[in-house]
Length: 209
Image (tube, rainbow, N blue to C red; front, side, top):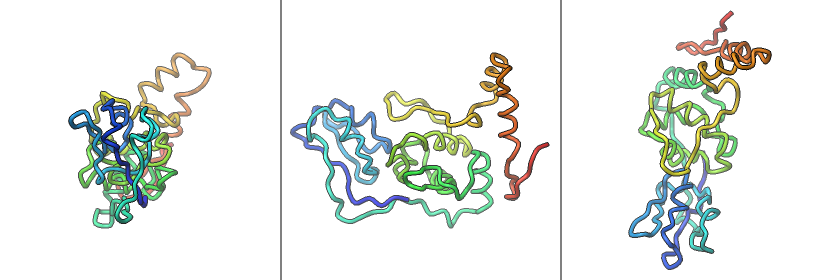
């Protein structure tokens, strides 16, 4: 959840249509029209990346919204077991924040997808994810999308890249390749231990032996 009191605005006289701002917007709130950057106020999460990236002084700035808005996806109308099952599939705890900046939880991200989010940009626009540092939560975003059966193509720009935060984020195939190359590091054994604990569909924890 995040409260937004500002949004980006473009100075039409200074904008050169270079697309640098469009390329870095995590919420997909900027599109080019007639060689001019256009801001979608419904998607803007006030992350200010467009301002930082713009190469023209004051071509993009912040302006107050008419009233504050909250970016949050209500999950109270979604079956709790479904939320827990999909979070477990993504390797997440339902109530634990997947973003340290916005405190967006795993089940809110899942709810956003169940309610129509199809891309990382959609998730950011609906929940406010990546409004802060935008670095660590991108890995969790992909995990949630994959768990919900959403395939994401690599973008032609630089809005995001896939990152891994820990050994457990790596696919088994890659782990086994590392284990063969560096058997002395016991990477495969460590990975399997990390994967031992999982959550059953009924929400109870089990442990492989």
